[in-house]
Image 1 (tube, rainbow, N blue to C red):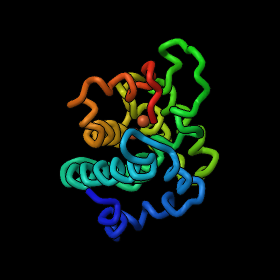
Image 2: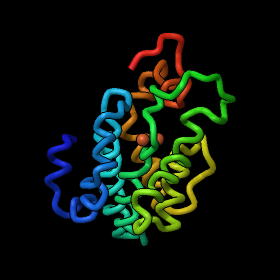
Image 3: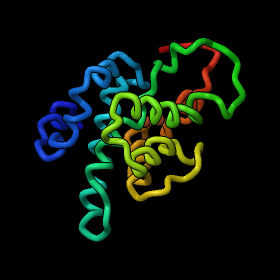
Length: 173
Ligand SMILES: [Fe+2]
Ligand SMILES: [Fe+2]
């Protein structure tokens, strides 16, 4: 799915532009996320989660607006993790385990008006099973969409440590 195609979906953008147009969110174009930027990755995950939510909403109550907001902000952490100081940390403090919580704190700072229990829980727990399971259906759709978009990670197990936030000896960007 190309970014241009996502940006041209009027129904999706009606909600998504509230986040995408924000100057701080735009800075994620400079944060590397595997082969994409965090900006591109977040848009892809959000669009996928939105499609899941639309489909599911035919038979189950799901808040499409909160899915779009939370998924756009699911990786809204403050520093590209590759640039974080190379300090040895316990496993449970590594990027993969903590960045959902950091993203949520940062989202509260820049988007306080859009933070709801569902949005906050979905952002914080999107890395399940590295975190507690999401409490709401919206969070389950986002964690699923994130893994779906990152599927190449599971097809290439060598990149799994990087996904979790454990750096290899050769620090590559
Ligand atoms: Fe993430
Ligand atoms: Fe992600």
